[in-house]
Each structure stands twice: as structure tokens, then as C-alpha cells.
Image (cartoon, rainbow, N blue to C red; front, side, top):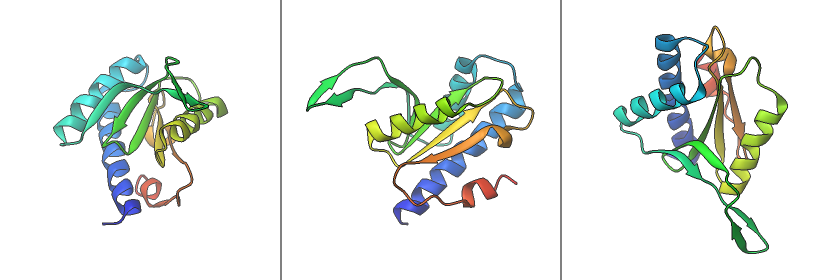
Length: 140
């Protein structure tokens, strides 16, 4: 399995878990509730999950602890940023893109649980990596 196939498999699992969590809880809860449920279900699925993982900024070869935290890091490969907002804004995508660059990860998922149908609240964000549309096509 090549890198792209591995990342697609991980993101497909994450999206499936997110859909299950959303079906069970619906929209309108705090991000922390969705995050806790996602962690539980992803671990049940056998995934390696880091929650609220600190993300330092390296500036001129100095590591600075600036208080950035990744909502979820899955399999040390995919960053998941969880939101529960009225609408995803460009700043949310920019935040995830910054996390991808700082961590040197290639793929992230921005998931807004405050929607009626979860597939409308999911954005796949890539950092210098060929973006496969297969993951999002499977949601349709």
C-alpha cells in the first residue's frame, strides 16, 4: 500500500466514525463532546489517536511552545480539526493548513458537526500532497 492509499484509508475510517458520531448525537453540542466520542470510536476501531496534541512552532531553529494544540492526530499521519460552528470560514481552513505545515503532515480533515448532514461539514485539506477525491466521493 503506497502513502496515498494509506492516507485515504485512514481518512475514510475517520469520516465513517464522524458520521456515526453525528448520527448518534446530532448537531448543536460542544466541540469537546464530539471530540471525546470520536476518540472513543477511533480507538475502538484500532486507530492510534492523540488528543489535544501540543504543536510547537520552530522559528530560526528554536522550538517555541505557543499553545497550539491539535484536536486529534490519527496514526501520526492525519490531523482532525473539530468544529461546531454555524458555518466553516476560510480562517478555519487556514488554521488547519498552518497545522499541517508546522507538523509536516500531508492531510487533514476539517469537520463541522453543527450541520444537518455531516458530509456538508467535512473538508479535506492537503499540504503538498496529491489530493484524491475518492474519499469525498464515497460520501455522496
